[in-house]
Length: 393
Image (cartoon, rainbow, N blue to C red; front, side):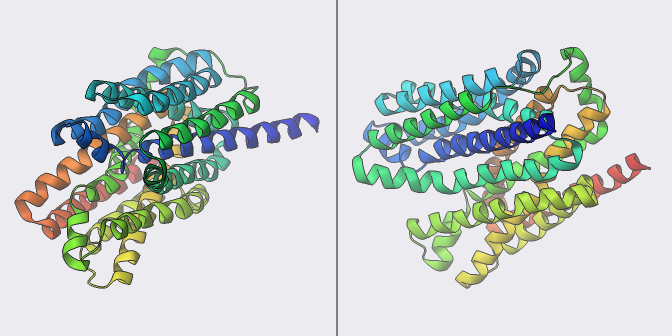
């Protein structure tokens, strides 16, 4: 009885710590969005260099993720979780004193490396602690932390920047990271017993066709918000004469909808099946991308953006437990490598979204470009549905 009670307590501690860790990471990631362009301008940094600064996070995350996946399977989850928060705190403090492009670039790269350690080890820890039937719900809860951090980060950073100048947001963020780090130290005292994993065997997961199909869905789910970033603000200005503040609030709508949808979708997907839920999510994505550029009234626009957020949750929330199940069925507990694959796919989606959206808008215009992307999502949805059905048979 005591053993069961202790397990429940350890599970709850792990879920709390991982959700908070993901929230902190995304809060600090988004915090610099309203700060960096203005500060970079004061340092006479070009727009191209600003673009490199923003893109360097995803590039660092992409490169570092497989490394931390293997490491966390070898040494456990607690170590990389602590290294991640240490790196994030250091990057945040360095940001406060960075006064050249190269220092800013180092900070952003370090932030991406820290995120790779936190996300990979954190998600793997949840897979270690929770059985298959509970993973949908807990992974959804963890993703709600991501959504809330994304939602609050720019607002938090912009408000503190206006209140106290450039350094204040980073000192405040370092304080939050310190609290997060202390909680990781004191609450993550034990891990479930895991058998020693052979890294070469773990990478055999890449030959699993269902896993590759899920990876494609993760790329699409990650690309959904980034499709909007380079092109949609101008649309809101043209149609609604929206100010930057209103645009910022509207961009918060998908994140809020995502935060509410992810835990619910995670629970539902456990009951009806993760592949079926992903298929539904891809269908909603195609519809929402088509609808989001149609409204001429603000309330309809809010509803369309809310649907975008729901589609993100419906695609991404089931992919995490499905990947864990695939690893388990392959008779491996290499969840670090498994979620390294997830993070890599997510990074690719973050990079492909703005590129595809910007290029297609230049060629076809905004409405046709979103429609073209929606058609590609719909084609993948049909391919995904057919292939997963054949695999099941």
